[in-house]
Length: 218
Image (cartoon, rainbow, N blue to C red; front, top):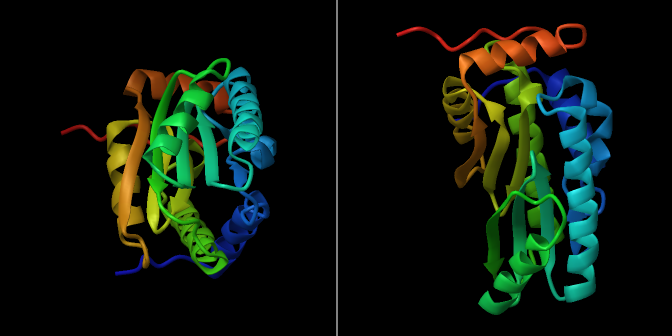
């Protein structure tokens, strides 16, 4: 089953995703640096967003020094939690990559999803970009969700969802992503917040972003 969404939103989401992944053909890809213009509508503090961009840039540089073109590694940081996706030659390289990133300043934790396998093809990566765009567009279309709270990464048809969200928001976004054609699996890497924290964030974002309903009462 494929979630329906409006074509203008899909076009916008795909365009943003393509811009963020223009370097997908090189061994290392930084997950979020191209999205710095979204600071105003992100649930992270501006300081946390800057830290995440720094983590991605420093981590990518160190991984490039360690592996050159022997691996295809994507590094994405959200609230100092780092997601590693892509392909490496073997398990030893997988562990080495995690150790390299663990020494980057401000890293809180690492989710290592690197696969000991050959690098994906351009066709496969293009499919992942399309899936990411569809998931983002579907989150925008969902009127009960604040799409700016989510970061979406796709690798080999596996969708990774990151963000500072409530449990109902996490469950709703997961259900949406699972309905997208081509999605093999959805992995949740969320910072779960409560209703009080959500209201505090909404007050801070009030001048720039619409409010989102708090978690429904049972």
